[in-house]
Image (cartoon, rainbow, N blue to C red; front, side, top):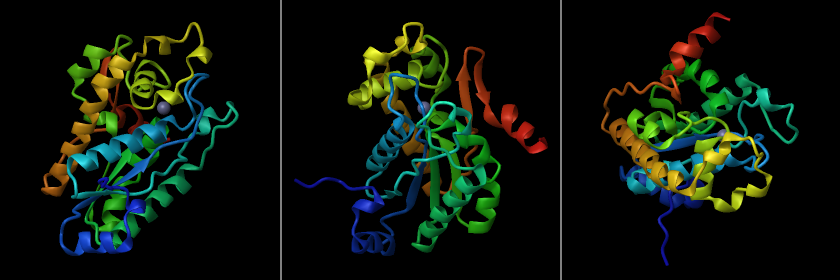
Length: 253
Ligand SMILES: [Zn+2]
């Protein structure tokens, strides 16, 4: 049985080299995420498992044009260190590590790089550096979280709590139920938690929308389009720009 392989670690060096030299591989994804507390009922690898799923399936949609770097599974999670087991690195270490991975891809012949994020704590550190990355690398490098690609109406159609991604809440619980149910521990879900709004059906409806959105973003990158897709979060008040709400504040601090 042959399996379509998109993770760089699953390719031989011959396969990667030939994919680049023939012009078959046109882009790469660098998944960034976290290993951090996800309340009592989700496993701490949740963000990494979900972004790896999105990266793999978006790459499969465009197969064989996109290769996926090994996910960066420890991100900026200082804000959860009170919950033991959370792993974190300093923002400057994290962003420089991501930079070096992008640089290695560039040296391997990749000219379109999507840093695809699955953890909210990484957004502001990366947004503060992405322009500098682009200048230093001299290739088409972008940073977005996979949820940035959701059409606003789809989010509010499914999310009763009107929040996405949230944290181990309705959305992430739904995604885990749909994508990796063995990582959900319902007996440990807190009684009062709004994670109880999570369902497998919501995850099954929303996961393919994000996969398609990420694949479309990559397709447009490969075609050399200028893309204006802001990092954002969805709240009851509506879709909110991460740049407007957080980045300016972080820069002036
Ligand atoms: Zn999460």
